[in-house]
Image (cartoon, helix red, strand yellow):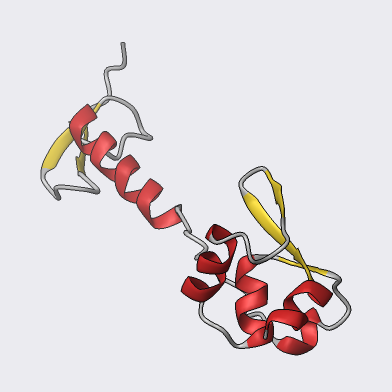
Length: 110
């Protein structure tokens, strides 16, 4: 145990305390944890997810289209497309709950 009696001011609460070592900057473990949480929040950078906007030019080379891509390419509503699927008026392939359409089949409908 050290015999040093160093008076310091706490970094967090600004109260005066006697440091147990020459490197002490917090008056208690509570102030240490508060400062640590504050630093974690400041260093935590959240990168927002940006959804890419689909245009017709992006879809020209594709042969198969998803529902969202077909809506953009043929300028029809998603409700209409899903109704055609339900009525079996449209050929499609279902892969893991994703509907894929051949572009030539959709051109015949619109």
